[in-house]
Length: 108
Image (cartoon, rainbow, N blue to C red; front, side, top):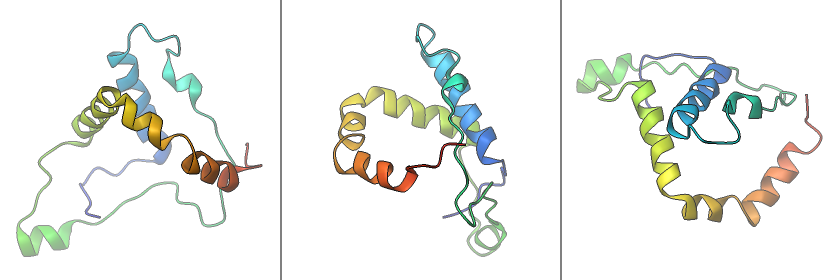
């Protein structure tokens, strides 16, 4: 993983995703999408944010992010919306079972 110099709290990132969904799906019955956020109790040691330091890769390789976070989120959401069949496949079966086991009883 490589940082992109755009530290943000996890909840702020999901709010950004919801804003993008609101823009891309203006007729959605779920608008505002932020109403769908469900808070769960944190697991021990849960991260509230991810702040990776990119200074080493910048210094040693000259690497810099080419896509700003908000644009990357927009592109990612667009891909998922355009690939609904793939999304259905990973949200059923064994993945759904994994979610049920790992998040059972953690409602906030």
